[in-house]
Amino acid sequence: MAEPADGPDFYTVQEVAARLRVSPALIYKLTGRGELPCVRIGTAVRIARRDLETWVEARRTPRAWPLSALPVQAPSALLRVRQQFTARGVLPSNWPSRQGRT
Image (cartoon, rainbow, N blue to C red):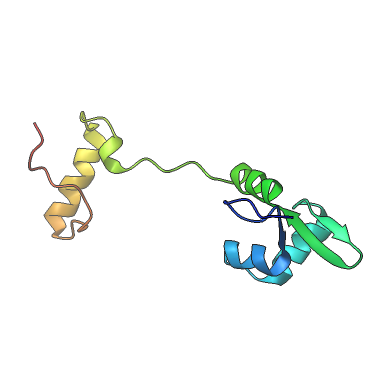
């Protein structure tokens, strides 16, 4: 059986663990609980490529919005916080500068 260009149809527990950068023990635990679909052939455990891809996609978390995505009209509360930090001289270094804003 020839392997498709994008990889094998089934992965071993060690291959899945290496791809996800977790321990094989965690993969065994997930398959044992039925959380990660697998195929058992005797004592061997194999995970189908499409099942792994589906499982990973189902657990993907949404990306957090960066501060730059917030509305340009900063609420007055945010401005007050900036003024308080500035007055104390402890404005966080990652706080966006006012340069370039209207």
